[in-house]
Image 1 (cartoon, rainbow, N blue to C red):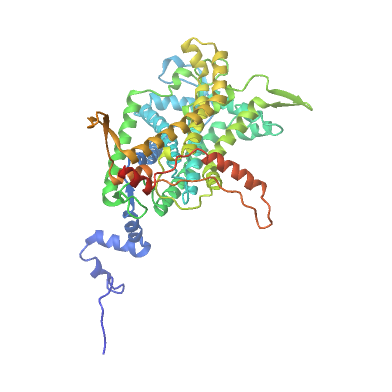
Image 2: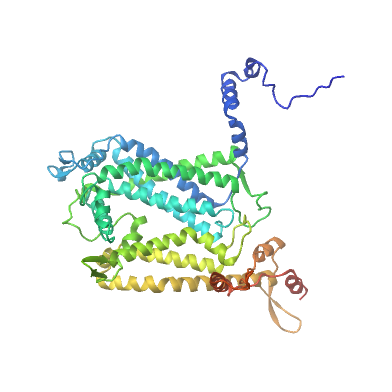
Amino acid sequence: MTTTSEPLAYDRTEPADARRSSGGLTGWASNYLDERTGISYVVREFGRKIFPDHWSFMLGEVALYSFVIILLSGTFLTFFFQASMAEVVYNGSYVPLKGLDMSAAMQSTLNISFEVRGGLLMRQVHHWAALLFVASIGLHMVRIFFTGAFRKPRELNWLIGFVLFVLAMGEGFTGYSLPDDLLSGNGLRIIAGMVEGIPFVGSWLEWFIFGGQFPGTSIVGRLYTLHILLLPAAVLALIGLHLVFVVVHKHTQFAGPGRTNDNVIGYPILPVYAAKAGGFFFIVFGVVMLMATFFAINPIWTYGPYDPSPVSAGTQPDWYIGFADGALRLVPHGWEFVLFNTTYSLNVLVPVVGLGAFLGAVAVYPFLESWVTGDKREHHVSDRPRNMPTRTGIGAAGLTVYAVLWAAAGSDLIATHFKFSIEGVITTLQFALVVGPFIAYFVAKRVCLALQKKDREVALHGFESGRIVRLPGGEYIEVHEQVDDFERWRLVSFNDYEPLMIRPNAAGRIPPQERVRAVLSRWFFEDRIEPVTRTDVELSSHH
């Protein structure tokens, strides 16, 4: 007796002609590719990925689309740019600069702007897209921080995003420095001064980076290699790795009906979200094109070629690197000393070390918070910032530091435009850098606690309706309308963390790091509003 069963798929030994007869050439090509790569499984699994339908997730998309625009416009520019510092005499169509000595890099940039059809538009598209790329990555990281989307199992993705932000700044700075105009030359002069300020190895590093004493002979060529090859390759690799982790870990979700890791609110990538994303890409592309058309950026012909003598107020780098320039400007004068015939420039070392510590703290924050709180669970629902007041206060303090340093990069413009003394502006910003983060932390934390109290009051007693009723005894009261069960759950459903208890180890001792951990944990959770319990709700309803 023999039994037969229907095959789960077509028989692989079936003649190929039989399998592709119904699909024609397209069917044959798809089958050929699938048989050798198994790509249909990848497309099928990836296509089922749900993408949350929340506006804040668009920030990451804007970053991705901006990078695509950067690649497209940058490819166009590479055909015309000459990465050379060879000295030439400009004889192009821009009359005010005719006859001036400049580098070949500066001349080719002017030719792109005035001689190449569409060149100026592409230059401005490239520059605006670069600014948007850095800004969207930064805002995306801010959203992730304040909602706690960096927690387990997404700590590595936070690190990847942080490295992408640093690489984006490096990519922007290398591109900004390529034209070899007055503005970019001054930026490179600052970098050279910072390198020279490093004890013992500063001079050697300057020769290594610039190919000689500043400005060297090959810095533009080296920056060009970084800008079009090494940094874009690293950014592409990290974007791909970031997207892989997004698919594996799924997106975090804000609390809502069915918004768990397995039942999210959103659309599958294929076909719905792919269509929406395609439309959104063209919207971003269109906005960048409009900005490049109507708003000039980096008009190098008004600056002229690099010359250290005519530096004046208004010489600032692009906004994303301004915090580093501001840190140098806020250092008090006289922070130098000589020891054993070696000059130690603390006015350079302190900002470099301080900025390194600041960026390092941002990178390791997810691991630090996990250690302080003892929270080792997986998290797939985003926090409301008010429910984590200490974290929100830390974020507000960090943003204040960044904002003050960023404002310091324009200290000369603030002084000239508002008729202030430059000394007064610097002193004010120095005071804000020291005191501002503490004020921001305290205010943000208190606001979060006040909002938690308000949520507790609404969950227990409802919200004010504005309707006044007179009771039989003559008393006037305002009628409160109760919230529905879901809204009450949204207001009170968050974890109530408590400070960690110090416990001795197996040897009966309490290690120093555990004492530090307990102190930090107590500081992190000492001010908190306990969530409303079911008993509280029942008592309130009965009352």
